[in-house]
Structure formats: C-alpha cells, structure tokens
Image 1 (cartoon, rainbow, N blue to C red):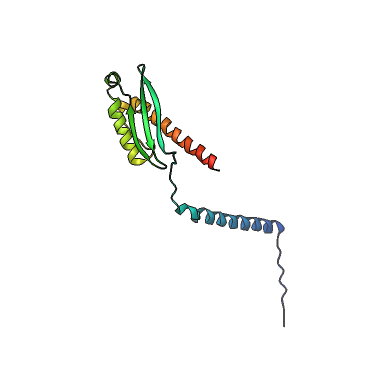
Image 2 (cartoon, rainbow, N blue to C red):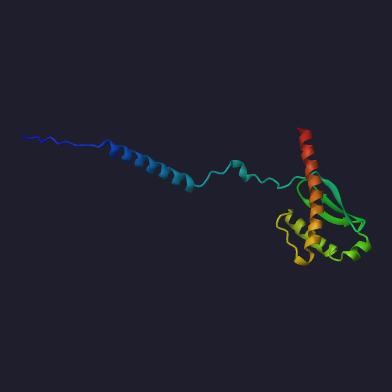
Length: 156
C-alpha cells in the first residue's frame, strides 16, 4: 500500500479575500430579498377612516371686495362637506366682479363631489378669483377642523 502524502498550501491572504467576498455576496443577496419582497401591511389598513373630521356646523369666512364684505358659508357634518354658499353678495360686487359667481359655482361643484380640496381645477380666465374664493373656503374648513380637534381634546 502506497500512500502518497498530499500537501496543500493555503495562503492566508487568499483565505481573507475569499471570506470577505463570501460575506459581501451573502449581504448582497439578503439586501435584494429585503428590497423586492412585498412589505406587510398593517391589519388596521383595512379599516377605512374618514379623510377629514369636522365639528358639525356652519362656518363663515369674510372676504372684503371693494369695501364690501362677502361671506363664504360652509356647512359640514362630522365627515362631509354638505354645502358651500356665498352670503351677502351685493349687486355692486357681482357687477364689479362678474367671474365671482361662475368661479364659485365651479369650485363648489368640485369640492362637494370630491369631498376634498385636492385636485381642483379652474380655468385661466378666473384663476385669481378662484384662488381668492378657495382661500376663503379653506379658512372656513380649517375652522371646522380646529373645532373638531379642540372637541376631541376636551373629551380626552
């Protein structure tokens, strides 16, 4: 029986490089798995919560147009915007600002339909009129949200 002894020479430098590349390869594979696996959604995501919560009531914001006060009145319940209307619109103001009523009606239709102030569109002809009216509507809705937040803090 002849047994030949085999001598294996391992260089320490090559072992270190091989170990480092193996660890980096494993980390790379783990990173890819983490990136491309779908994330778990919370169980609470199935519960639909209202986007806005308001204190039910009627909230007004005043606009001053040519020394005349025009009120924007927003009526809300706990989760919906029920109506928006112009109060105290004088004929002189309507004559001086002929685009105020059509621009307002267009905004009201979009807001009541979407129940949100996001994604509103208006034409370039009445851009600034719409922006002024939209700011007044936002202010009224902010009053309703603030009242709801204050009410929820009182309950706690």
